[in-house]
Length: 234
Image (tube, rainbow, N blue to C red; front, top):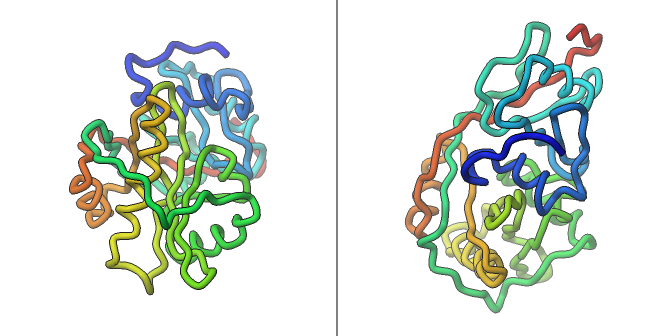
């Protein structure tokens, strides 16, 4: 797949993942890559896209289809619907203290219905029926119910993103999210890789937790969610 790589995989992490460890999942039209629609909503653009980039996004998503661009640098064309434009932060965890957790269990496809239910109630970000295929997801159960989870999403070379960090509201304040972040990060470190994550810039509480655990700000970026026109005029 063509396209110049950034100086750091974290500069364009979705592209770095889909041209690297997640290449087996990549779908491509022209210069644009994406995850399968039931895995993740993200598309990846090369560092220097040409004037046809929006046509390629439209070809991938199809009329009325949606896409999320992490690190968008320009507006969508006229006629496209902007579904969301979220300022975000990217934090890297080179200073994170990691630790396995005896209560954390690896989640499997059989757990996806409970995972989707927990995500629907807590809204940590996109999690779809096959998102679990992106990496390891760990969860904590009480009385058989999944009450907290965290896992791996983007996988640029040398790095793995921690994502879908969420806790049932009835069990917050017990440090479960912090424990799961450290546990997921322990698995990442065992592979010789480093953890990173993204958060909405407005999610001050989560960012404070991440910084307390040892994450530091790497960069700011914008997550742009768009919908292709039904009658694509490109």
